[in-house]
Image (cartoon, rainbow, N blue to C red; front, top):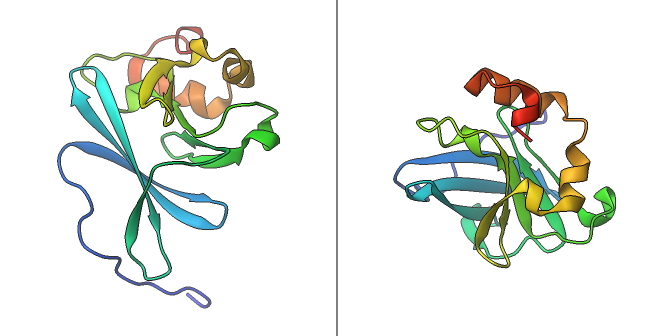
Length: 151
């Protein structure tokens, strides 16, 4: 369409079983890949599309927080959300652990390289009560569990 340009970006940037998300953050295009690292363990790779249309790995998001969901992914700053800790990714774990039908909100802290349940971060947990519709819909459609068991 008018005003849009399509171009091919680089080569395959990762391989193996993973779930990928494209997300805009502060005017930049990010590619987030979630890998099953070991059984019931995840690793997250974040790439940024640079000015030469090459994917460059990011090791920090600064004060940004990425929210990943089925059909709804976005980023926000800590000041936008009135929270103190950034540099993390929040998502439903059931988007990846389909075999186990685990259902919970997870936080991947890039500073520590650690995956935790949202309940371990009270200031984030408070952002999700009452649960937004995109969380409830994702959880219930994947697991059939009530929305309260997902948070």
